[in-house]
Image 1 (cartoon, rainbow, N blue to C red):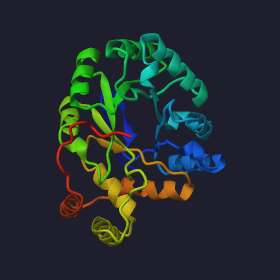
Image 2: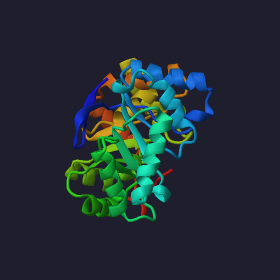
Image 3: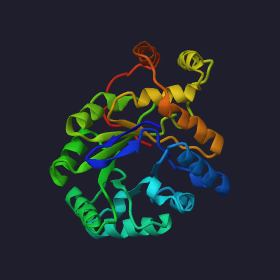
Image 4: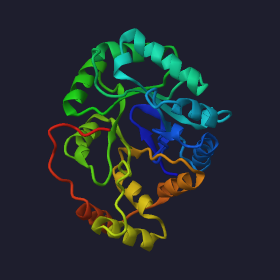
Length: 279
C-alpha cells in the first residue's frame, strides 16, 4: 500500500483508507472482519465520526490489539464544537473507540460556533495528547481562508470533502488552495452514493477497458484516479472482507498519463458550482 505524508503530521499515511459511514448498518461481525481485512492489506487510515451512529464502536472493536497500526480519524459535529464541547465530544469518541488518542480530529462541517473556539478546543486536546493533529471537512475556499486565519499557519492537516468521478467540484478551487497551503485532501464517498457508473454507460466502459488492461477492477481504477495528485487520499467504505480487499488493490495500481486523460474526458470536470457539494 502506498503511503504519503499527511500534511504537517510527521507520519506516512495509507493513500487508500477505510471509511465507516453506514458501516453500522451491516452485520456487525462482518463489518469488523472487513475493517480488519483492510488493516491486513495496509489500509490503516481509518475514518469515522460521532455522527455515524454506532460506527465508532465498530471501529473500536476492529482495532482492539492493533491500535498502533492505525491512523485513526474522527469528527466533531458542528453543534458540539464549542471550546468545551469539542473536548467533551472527543472524550466521548475516545471512549467509544476504546483508545486514548486520535491521530487526527476534524470539524465535520462549518457550523454555529466560532472557529477560534473550536480550534482552541483542538489545541487543548493536542496539548493533552488526546489528538495528534486536527483538520476540517466540507470546507470551501472561503471557509478554508477563515480557518487558516483562525487556526494559524500550518495547523490544518486536512480537508475531507466529497469527491468521486461524477462530482469533481473540488478540483476548481478547493484542491489547488489545499495544495498551495500544505493541506491534504481526503475524498469521501469515492464511488458516489449508490451511483457508481456501470459497464453499460460510456464512462463505465472506459473504466472497464482500463481495468482489463491492468487485470484489476473498475472501482480500483476509479480510486486510483482520485488519488493521482500527491496531496490526495481517499477513504472508501467496505462492509465485507471481499470488498475491502478490492479497495486495497488500488493501493499499488499505477495509471498512465494517457489512461488518466481518458478518464478525465469520460467524466468531465463541469462548471464550478456556487457552493461546495457535500453529503
